[in-house]
Length: 540
Ligand SMILES: *[C@@H]1O[C@H](CO)[C@@H](O)[C@H](O)[C@H]1NC(C)=O
Ligand SMILES: *[C@@H]1O[C@H](CO)[C@@H](O)[C@H](O)[C@H]1NC(C)=O
Ligand SMILES: *[C@@H]1O[C@H](CO)[C@@H](O)[C@H](O)[C@H]1NC(C)=O
Ligand SMILES: *[C@@H]1O[C@H](CO)[C@@H](O)[C@H](O)[C@H]1NC(C)=O
Ligand SMILES: *[C@@H]1O[C@H](CO)[C@@H](O)[C@H](O)[C@H]1NC(C)=O
Ligand SMILES: *[C@@H]1O[C@H](CO)[C@@H](O)[C@H](O)[C@H]1NC(C)=O
Ligand SMILES: *[C@@H]1O[C@H](CO)[C@@H](O)[C@H](O)[C@H]1NC(C)=O
Ligand SMILES: *[C@@H]1O[C@H](CO)[C@@H](O)[C@H](O)[C@H]1NC(C)=O
Ligand SMILES: *[C@@H]1O[C@H](CO)[C@@H](O)[C@H](O)[C@H]1NC(C)=O
Ligand SMILES: *[C@@H]1O[C@H](CO)[C@@H](O)[C@H](O)[C@H]1NC(C)=O
Image 1 (cartoon, rainbow, N blue to C red):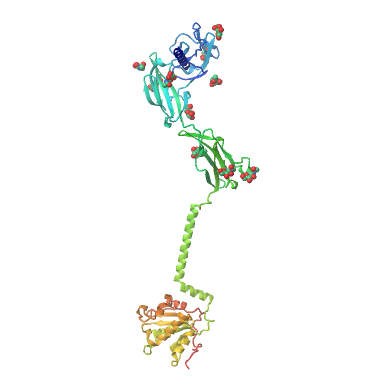
Image 2 (tube, protein in one colour):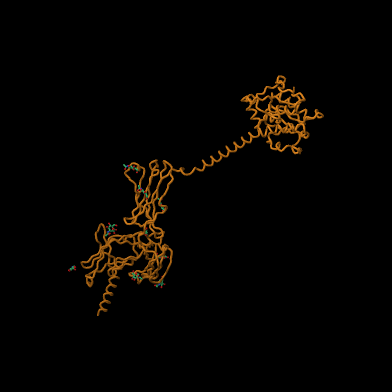
């Protein structure tokens, strides 16, 4: 008993559903030209069974009012029970239609849209559906009303055929993001020997999980933005969030500090891979000093969960030296270094000339206050039989000629200035004491017993007492000297001059310059005679 009742209820529901599905409840209906179309009265249960009542279809004409449609069947428009069929519908069929049966009526307004010649479907005739990713979704290509005429059914995705069937067609699958698109069911209807296409299109959107998410900013939570004064910039606050989340910039909008700061109207929302993003732009026109260093905060979220992203403007170039300035600086410093190195090298090369020039320029004289008589004591090989030797000529003739006559120095040459005999040793000692320099004319034969005292005494003074400086003039290379005292080898190389006897030297030659350089600074009076300066010391 219970079972039978249940079965009946189900049966009635099924019939009702079918009727509901095929008839048109809504008043505004649109159709696409050149497609089969029908209008069907939704039979109410109260009207059911009133079979005797005549059925009347009318179309509204602006000048004539309601005009009854010819009940005789025509090839294109047919009356069929409670339905008015178009094979196919045309643009001129647009208008208001009225169904009358007894005192029950139904009215529709039909809009016929033009066919889209460039697409397999008309965008105005799509049914939008959203499906959740990974959830099952189906494309159900079936038209109950036209079931008996369906010859073939094809399914297109974005106008590319993906499936075909001779009757109904059903596609069921788990939604993936790439499944999003336009699905068109194209029914081929065979009516009175003619084929008609009927298209219904679903706009499928695949959505991500709708579980509420906590906003996640794209980019860091704290942003430094480099700007130049006067530049206009846009701060882009964007987050992975929920579509309905609020997004706003917080700064005192009324504050005159921020007159050049505006929030762009409206939030940008986009969905990528089923995830919802929101963003809001803050425009800062002609950045000024007041905008620098201010924290511009952006908040995304709802009352439950919200988060803040901060932006701070910093002046461009405060952290890094611009590239071109850096390069220029490098080049300049390299050039300066090169110039300094060259200058130092030149100074080293022309040191002697520079010092001599300086002495001349300043008129420096070291000899005035030290209480010494001679500028240099000349020590050389003194052998009776070799008076005509090269050393002798050099020491007794060349040196005085140049140093005394030309440069105005006063030399002490034992042979010349001291009368032989007496306490030679004491006298030499005393003469060295009165001299500012010792000029040792060094040759192979120098190491004879007679001069060795002079040498030792001079070296002692120079190296131990530091009272007198030694100038060594070499006649032969130093390597030739086997018995050269150790202390002489310690002499700085610039205090050793090499005499080239075979080359005639002018006063401006390097040899003489170097010698004068090693001599004490003195205001030179060329041509000064030594006659007035007779040796103070004479052997009694
Ligand atoms: C039907 O459409 C017309 C114009 O498109 C509109 O004025 C009217 O309100 C609509 N009626 C309904 C019930 O939607
Ligand atoms: C209304 O009726 C007149 C006369 O029958 C006809 O010429 C005209 O096209 C009709 N208008 C519409 C909109 O159907
Ligand atoms: C109209 O419908 C009502 C009930 O809804 C019925 O009582 C009445 O007789 C009907 N009139 C005609 C003319 O059919
Ligand atoms: C299809 O659905 C998407 C997402 O809902 C929408 O943006 C788009 O406008 C729809 N297309 C048509 C033709 O209605
Ligand atoms: C497909 O749709 C038709 C009517 O539109 C319905 O009768 C049928 O049950 C549907 N099929 C599925 C599997 O939902
Ligand atoms: C579909 O139509 C073709 C002719 O256009 C006919 O040969 C074929 O039998 C029809 N198929 C069905 C299932 O009606
Ligand atoms: C129906 O659509 C098919 C392709 O789907 C096309 O070849 C055919 O010409 C169309 N027929 C009509 C009457 O539009
Ligand atoms: C803001 O940033 C988002 C993500 O980087 C981007 O998609 C959007 O187009 C940006 N908006 C503007 C106006 O630049
Ligand atoms: C404007 O803002 C600045 C800094 O944010 C603040 O010192 C000043 O008091 C504010 N002025 C007004 C009128 O709110
Ligand atoms: C912006 O945010 C930072 C830290 O999130 C906060 O210290 C600062 O007070 C905020 N500034 C404003 C104007 O809301």
